Length: 136
Image (tube, rainbow, N blue to C red; front, side, top):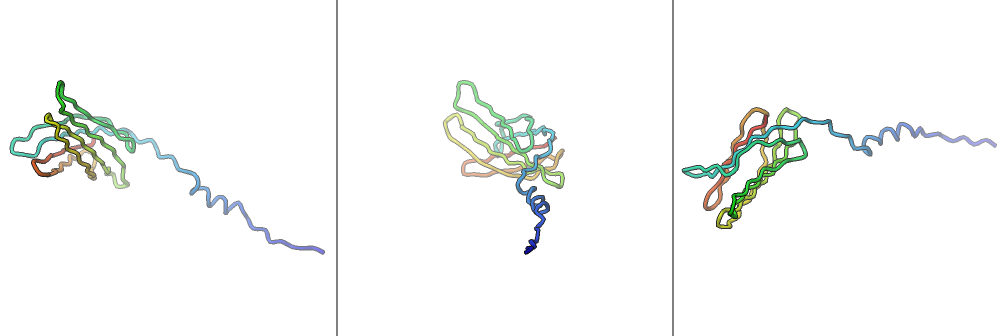
């Protein structure tokens, strides 16, 4: 007595599942030079933090300033994520401590094209901040 069995081809099924199981490595992306300036947003703006940092996409970087013999400090964390259209999503996290110990913190996300300066203004009771940034 002979029995016949239907053989199901497993190789195509396994090959079809492989991409969902394996995490594709992101291609190496060159670091971006990020110029940033944070200033008070009032009648006489004062620059609080300014500089250039090199940011690897998806890795982030930090710019920090501490005043000597004072509680005053500013810290800005920046992360960039490239988008398919040549722009970058830039996530900014800012923390500030004034000389009198007052704390200010905010987070902001903007879409920026390389070579174009973006300026954003944040307002809050008792003041505000203006941030300008450009990706080079």
